[in-house]
Length: 233
Image 1 (spheres, rainbow, N blue to C red):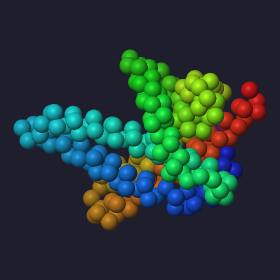
Image 2: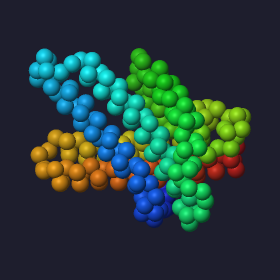
Image 3: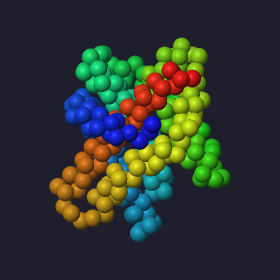
Image 4: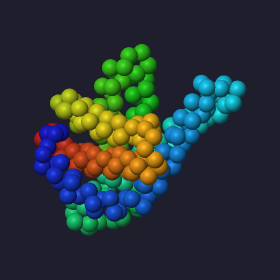
């Protein structure tokens, strides 16, 4: 089951422990990404207001840089939060989540890029096939991090993710939309409203904490679904 009251409660219980472990790395990385996103938005606004004051090449370069950086940070988020969640499920027993991140980062990044390219190709002409592909590949990074058969070379991460999502597509779609929309709305409100720097930063932190909570929930969902599929092929 994708939507689970028990899993929401479990995520809430694990949240402070996972937060303590991941915040030293994830918060600074997120702040860098926020800064680059803000820089891109300022360049874009300047381009429309006064085309002679901003270079198209600079805007494109900053935009590409933001996409690349966001991809790298997304992979770090997924690996670090999922491993920390798994570790805290065992009461903190296990190897360092940071060591796990450094060991698996390059391979997970490759699979993330594969999934990104696949989703983009499906989205070339119609939006719906791209959304479908996006949902089906939700668990790609988790599989490439935690599945022993993947590391043995006997399992493809993209195909395995589609297999795990089978029969769970609609509830997972709503979960992903729900996960994205609330932090996004808070961040957009913080950008557009004139509330003072203190309130603005506080809203960004709230959005960041919501993202972390849902990342924990999604990791628990993967572990539950993978365990179910393993016992019920």
